[in-house]
Amino acid sequence: MTRLDATFSALADPTRRAILARLATGEVTVMELAQPFAMTQPAISRHLKVLEGAGLIVRRVDGTKRPCRLAPAGIDAVEQWLGMLRQTLTKNYERLDGVLAAMSQEQGDKQP
Amino acid sequence: MTRLDATFSALADPTRRAILARLATGEVTVMELAQPFAMTQPAISRHLKVLEGAGLIVRRVDGTKRPCRLAPAGIDAVEQWLGMLRQTLTKNYERLDGVLAAMSQEQGDKQP
DNA sequence: GTCATTAATAGCTAATCGGTTATATAATTA
DNA sequence: TAATTATATAACCGATTAGCTATTAATGAC
Image 1 (cartoon, each protein chain N blue to C red):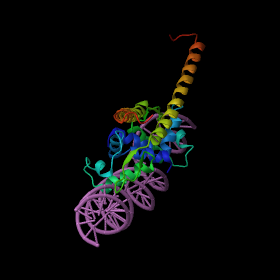
Image 2 (tube, chains in turn yellow, purple, green, orange):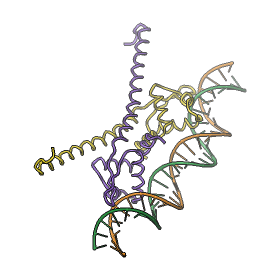
Image 3 (cartoon, rainbow over the protein chains, first blue to last red):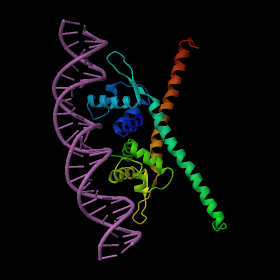
Image 4 (cartoon, chains in turn brown, green, yellow, red):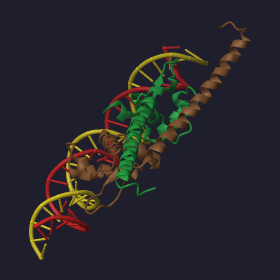
């Protein structure tokens, strides 16, 4: 599984997206993250492992706590891929415009 | 499963991302899409169904063919979510900057 | 040292996923 | 009408996933 696979797959889960949204406001510990969800602590820990594997968060050690924070690198990778797609899309729209314009010319400008 | 779940989940598969990249260059039929992959036609048909369900492609009918093309709406939804995350992130960095500045003031500007 | 807290891990289960082969449907061609 | 082409669907299989409970490890408080 590529890093991009892991990142998109991590983002496909609503719990994990909610965790990321929470982390966008700053560093949060595992128990703090778990609290608003109807889910056990081990379940949250596994979600965090998935997010970490996807390069979307990083964790540090603070006593018994493991505060998490966002790692923008993962999000960058996603936006880069989307940008590539959009660029191809735009390029081909432009080419299509060119083709249509040429066709229009050949027909003696019947279309406005 | 929400639409956003479906979209991210659809993007998590490399075959499906390759299909989207191909479709960014224009309309393609199912067999044309299947040809470069080491995969059977039913497998591709299912990937297309997933992409359609995620709002990432649309299909039209042309005789026995079903040409697919990209539906930018799905990609828009993803970018919108990422934008929201980035906005929260930026907002909180700014707030953090403010907090740090205030702390600096209280300490009598010991930091540069 | 003992107990409480924070978090991770192991092992289980039901559901989902991504592929396969075989078959069905629908339009085209001979 | 019969054969071919393009695609979809069904039934199956092995791997993965997302949750659970129970347990473990490590730190902090008393």
